[in-house]
Image (cartoon, rainbow, N blue to C red; front, side):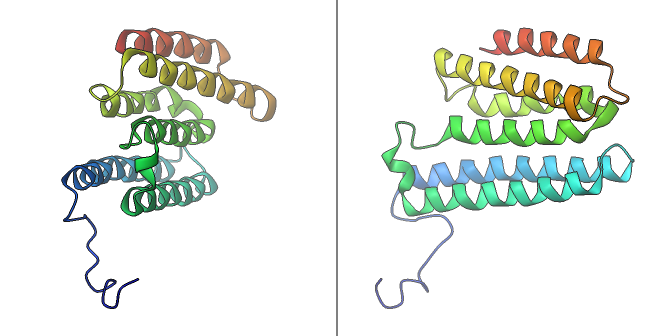
Length: 177
């Protein structure tokens, strides 16, 4: 490391316009993550979600964003087929939504709307095949949440509604793809 290089560090690189654009887009996605965290906190205040779920969500979203920023800022992303890491970022966001939905109780259906935001981040960046893979991943993870609910938290869950929401989510995802 050159002497004074830490002093010259900038959050967004000045010497690579494409990488600078990727990092700016990453910050837009990070803002959406933190809006999701805020929504989780509001759900906690309203009594829909337990505090331990919100604490876990905040820790995970902070960790994901720190790791993604380091990957982008150090140039590790340049070794990937998609240097913008769009699919990876979308899958990370989907996992966070699934985590929150597991604890969301009756607010689970409303939280499905968060997927629309996630999908918008990939709509111009991903091809149809990649979008279909993301859609399958989303359906599998939501199906996984339903299975986990059935096994560990069946009290108060309307599984007919969960299955309907899974089917509707599948239709929306195929339409987006």
